[in-house]
Length: 384
Image (cartoon, rainbow, N blue to C red; front, side, top):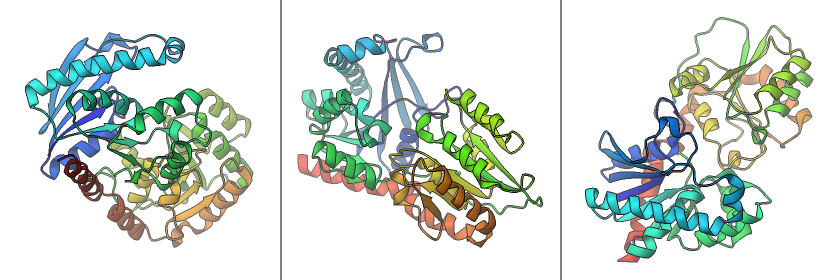
């Protein structure tokens, strides 16, 4: 198959996480023998390091095209004139699509990540009859109460897709409840670099780790409070939080107020290789999120063999079980604290090698790529 990915972008040294889900799936499908072409349409503000117009690069056998047109209005104007904004974005995308088709030929299928990409990919379907499969993992669609403008936008887009994929069972249920649309569950995939490595540390410190953008939805404030309430022996534990974001100063203030500055460390954003190293050198992973469409950071930790403590925030219910960890309600510092204390005393009872093997069996790049391949084949067959 020739598959056009409609993506946010492609990861770079400056932005290592931007488009990483799309990149991983593109590589996995390419390994199955499919011709993958990635198209991204960028309207972000930081023009000082972006080149206007279409740029092209090769990543192995994968051809990547990006159209940068500059910032299209401010947020307030976009929300006020959303139909006009979408119309403009679709016109720009069609321009990119037609330029790429001249170089690469017409695709058999378009595969779009997130609502925004699906919204513009539909323009090519309407003009050229190319089937579109959209995969949804936007956190806004996972909330119980979806914002009115997003709900209207998504409802119009989803019904135009030939197939909608949800990255977790919880997200599938939320889509059905809010839009009356059936979707197919395909979980996010693991990067191959996340794997078990025996922990050779000799110190007596139990190392907790958590990763994610420092945003309210990630619940790091509750996590810090839970450690404050746990009263663990102060010289025998640490928590490393990997990630950056607008909550940094607030979280640092909480840490200082609870006098936990010797135990809890905000280390900022790290490269993927650094994240792997942190996970492999840690003992327990914690996901304290208030909402997750899936939770790929958590399965990366499981792939490294870490037992997990996770809130019942949506996606986690697809992979947390008795053999690999514990769950607790969201926004409940007392309950989370109890789980942390239990794990502090019992983490060595979990079989790290088994946790890693089980996770990789379900979420390896090859397994997820073959699930997507089967969906694409069915969609194309229906069109023929």
